[in-house]
Image 1 (cartoon, rainbow, N blue to C red):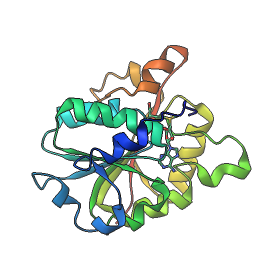
Image 2: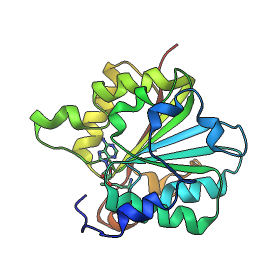
Image 3: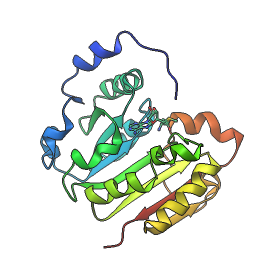
Length: 213
Ligand code: SAM
C-alpha cells in the first residue's frame, strides 16, 4: 500500500508512548504488562489504518490486541483511531512482522490475523508474502497450542498460494470460505478498510488454520 508521507506521523507516534511500543524485543514474554488486564493476546500483522483492530478490541474486551504495521504514515492513522477509541486493550508496534518470533515468547500469542496482506505477485518475491513458509515458521514459534491464523484477502492468486503454503507447512484447516460475505454459518467478519473498498469487485476469501501439536 503506497501512502502519502505524513510529516506529523513521527512526532505523533512519539507523543503516545502508552499505546505505541518502541522496542518490542524488550517485552518478550511480558506483553501482558502493557495492558490493565491479563487476557488472551491477539496479533494483527499489516494492520493498515486500524479499523479492524479497533473494532475487534471494542467487541472483545476480554482479549488484548497488538497491531503490527511497518509503515509509519499508515500506523499513525491507525494510532489516531486507537487514541480516539479510548480502549485500553490495544497496543501498536511499528515494525516488520517477519521478526515476530523475536518479540514474543513461545506460546505467548493466542491467535494471528492477516488481513488483505500485500500480494507480492512475482515469484521471486514469494518469501515476502505473509503466508510464506518463512513467516509461518515464525508464527508457529509464538502461537499457543491450538492458536489460529486467520487470513482473508480479495486476491485470488494470493489465496491459492496461501492454501498451498499452509497445507504444505503443514497446518490444519479449521475453515475455508470462498465468499466470506455470502457465508451463512455465522462466521465473524469485522471489516477492514481494504475489505470495504474492494469487496464490491469480487469475493472475499478466508482461511482459518492451526498448527498440529
Ligand atoms: N489490513 C489492512 C486492511 O485490510 O485494510 C491493510 C492492508 S494493506 C494491503 C497491507 C498492509 O500491510 C500495509 O499497510 C503494509 O504496510 C503492511 N505490511 C506489509 N508487509 C508487512 C510486514 N512485513 N510487517 C508489517 N506490516 C506489513
